[in-house]
Image (cartoon, rainbow, N blue to C red; front, side, top):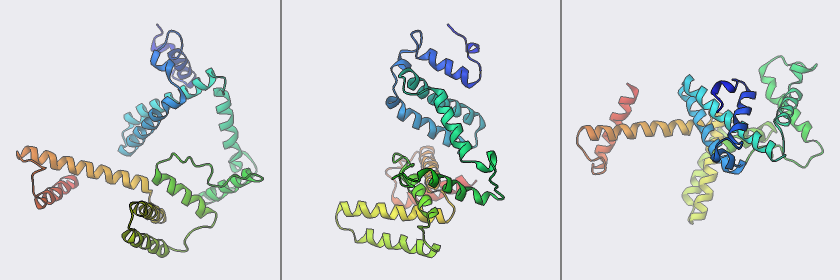
Length: 262
């Protein structure tokens, strides 16, 4: 049985590890996996990495980076076994793409300021799309979290000149969508108008320089922390949270907020 030292702490070591796991002397579970079966696990690992980054936990970041990297290596190994592509093809395409999109680093183009980066990047991508029927939005995976996808399509549309002239227009649009939601009558209309409202709120977030997905995730965390604090306080006081009147729950909420602030 190979020891951990049989696999060097490099990408080649990870590749050999994954190849062994999927080999005849490896793990039955790993051998049975497909790109499709691993999708949700890869997504889960990415979210765990994001959480570690937000917690600023270096040890956890290292662990979660390893988990994500293992999943990427698994996808490459499965593709290699099926004869669909190789690791070399993945890396060759990646290197070629990013060298091509950084002519100010690897070519004669000049970039004096970081503010030039995004317009330059967009111009290069538009050049790549010339003669194609693809949209500037087509590179975005539709399976992204909805708030992140909304922000991404808004960013790309704005860089093509399709945007509000000022923040006042953005705020007015949010108010308009809220009115339309209030006026909606059927469940289908309410769902549609709620989507439009959320889209406009994401746009407002973009104008404020905030990331809606991150903002909502942090709000979720604050709610979780405060709610679990309320539950803990009730246990300590031998109270049933569920049976408390609403005004008592609101008092507990304020107490939990005060505890959170320290």
